[in-house]
Length: 115
Image 1 (cartoon, helix red, strand yellow):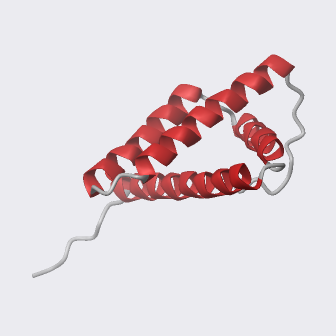
Image 2 (cartoon, one colour; image 1 turned 180 degrees about the horizontal axis):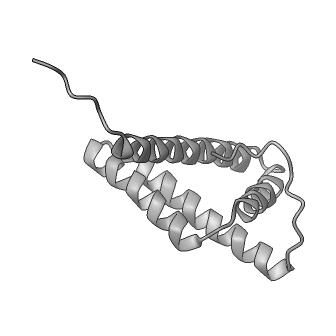
Image 3 (cartoon, one colour; image 1 turned 135 degrees about the horizontal axis):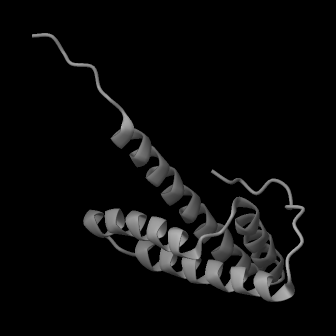
């Protein structure tokens, strides 16, 4: 899971950076909408939606980090936007962790218990 500790050393055209940032804003907005849901089923579907959206965005790890840092810079001047960004990025990380854990659990083989 990406933790965005350092800025990626990646050279991209400005248009690509812009499209990455816009795609990430759409992803974060979808996270915010799904987090408002009280129903457990809806949250389960939201985790699947995050995976689907991320597959559709098809960011490389470096491009994902570029989009994160661009939005971090864009939102840092406004405290309410900064709070929204931080909370929504935290939700994204939690959903990514849940999705990764689910994938690991599905791939596991459990030992049979002897009766």
